[in-house]
Each structure stands twice: as C-alpha cells, then as structure tokens.
Amino acid sequence: MSDTTEAMDKTETLGWLRRISGDLATATLQRLESTLPWYAEMPPARRSAVGLVAQAGITSFIQWYEDPGSTPWIASDIFAAAPRELLRSVSLQQTLQLIRVTVEVTEERVAGVGEHLREAILLYSREVAFASADVYARAAEARGLWDARLEALVVDSILTGEADEELPSRIAALGWHGHGEVVVLVGTTPAQLDVDQLRRTARKLGVDVLIGVQGSRLVLVVGRTHGPSGNGNGNGDEAELPFSEVAARLEPGFGSGHLVLGPAVPALVDASRSARAALAGFAVAKAWRHAPRPVDADDLLPERALAGDPLAKQTLVDRIYTPLQAHSADLVTTLWSYLDNGRSLEATARELFVHPNTVRYRLKRVSEVIGWDATGPREALILQTALILGAIGPDATRRRATSSRRPR
Image (tube, rainbow, N blue to C red; front, side):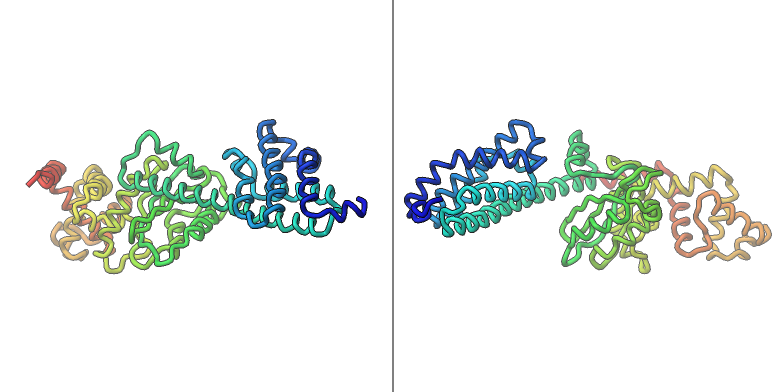
C-alpha cells in the first residue's frame, strides 16, 4: 500500500471496503475449503448457506464500521441469513472456526490500510463471537426446555399407564439408551434438585434415567444401557449391579423421606406396572416405622393391601397363597397355626399334634416354595396378610372392589 492509501479517511476506507467485499467473500470461501475439512465435506446446499453467513458477516462489518453503535442488531443479523437447520448441523466450535478464518482473510487483505481498521476488525470479530455464542446458547436452552417438557410428558404417561402409539417415538426423541429391564424409583424432591448430577451418577452405574418432578415427588424411570450380557460402561462390576444397589447409589439425589423402588419389568413400555407399585408403596411407606431407604415396593405389600391396592392383593395371593395351596395343604395349615400362635414352635406342634421338628421342616419347605421366611417378624406380617387374602378368596375381593366403585 502507498502512503496515500494509508492516509485514506474513513469515507474513502468505507468505499474501498465495499468495492472489495465480493473479493473478500470469495477468498474466505476458498480458505474455508482448503483449511476446514468439515466445510469441504458438506453438501453443496449447506456450503452455500455457510457462504451466505460469511458474506453477511463481511457486509455487516462494513455497516458496523460506518456506525459502531449498531453492534447488537448487526451481529445478530449475520445469523439471520442462515437456515434453521444449519444451526443443527454446524457446531459452535465450527462457527468460531468460520469466524477466525474470515477475520484472517480480511486482516490479510486490509494489512497496511491503517491500524485503526485492524483494531476495528478485531473488535467486531469479538462481538460476532459473543453473538454466535448467544445464538447457540439460546438454541440449546430452547432444546433443553423442549426436552424437559417432553420428558415430563413421557414420565407422566408411564405413571398414569396411558401409553399411546406415540410413546415409543417420544422416548426415542429423548435419546433413551435403555435396553431390557426397567424399574421406577419414587421419592421426595430435594430443595435443590441437581438433575445433571443424577444423570452423571446414572451413567457411571450403567443405566439411563428419565426424570419427572411432580411437586414434592421425584420420579426416576431407570433402565440399563446395555443388554443382559453386555457391558454398558466398560466396567464389568458396575454393569451387573442389581437395581436395589443402583437405587441406593442414586439415593443422595432425593430429598428426605421415603424412597420406594418398583419391581423390574421387561421393557420401558411396561414401566407403568413398576410405577403403579412404586407409587402405591410410596403412599403407605410411612406405615412401616423402620422401612429402609430405599425400600422395595414388594416389601410394602401388606401396607399396600390394607390401603386397598388391588395389585398388592393379587401379588400376595399369586406369590404366596396359591403356590403353597398347590404344593401342600399341610404347609398352609402349619403356616396358619405358626402365625396364630405367635411364631411358637411348641404351641404350633401341640395344636397340630406333631413334633416341633416337623413344624421346623414344614416352615423350611414354606421358605423354599415361596422364598419368604415365616420366622422373621416382617416376613411373618407379609405371609399372614397373604393367607387372609387367600382365605377371603378372589370372588369376595372382587365384590368388595366393585362395591367401592359404585357412585353414591
């Protein structure tokens, strides 16, 4: 550049910039193609859209140089030239690379024109970088709000059991990585809910979570991120953790109070069964004074049955009374007598006219058949409730449930 060029005033500089703006845009696109592999691999339509953004940036710089007070709207106007899908295909990092290349080409072309022009380019590029960060932050925030609403809708559908044909597509839209068994965990919402921490903990445990907040109640739908024999996180120990252990490690993310784990179901579309059990257990957990945290919903079957939960009643009959009755009437009789006599072996033996060792043997067989041990106080309550429900019979239970639903 000559001394005359360096001495150009602002008006002459603006005229010169407008004349070379087309050349700057062409040189910028050529530099993008030669230095940024991601740009060269783009489809022609996307490359054209990026070119429009670069051209808009150069044009806006000239307008800004003429009126620096127009920074806010001009910087935002650059991205108005880009179609909406470009924001989804070009990352923030790539956008900043685009800005850097454009600035480099412009600096090279205006070198020697004047230090004031170079400083203006650097200042403007900073404003554009901030504007681009703001655009992506707003897009991420909007996406996050949409995902949160969609996640809340999915969790609500699971809790109510009102699954429809759109549920699988909604789940897929959330990026659910779960495969196989799923459980529902219900507890209280902490004063400061850290959703990100819950998700990080879940990933470390090899599970995925859907999180729903319903006032004071926090609901987690938990599913493994790998198949039955897979390893979702490269850690064989963590991959095979039982859901009870997973719930224990997620427990710090809940507020004080009871935490109830529903039974495992085969897939996410079946999660409403686990949710019903967990919600019913959460509603009555306070009736068990020394309930652990977390507690399995099936460990609250007596309280749930007393509260009128039909699922708990049916579970108790199906898993305890029916198998014992089918195996041996003597086992049912012995269990009745043992529980009625305050879990006394001698009193049971006298009532049944058998030796106490016979009672011991039959109680052992009861445990082998159904998996519950009648000698423990908590399990004795579960077994006695099952015997009462089994003795009432399904017809009587059904009549009571029907009558309770009649309008008054």
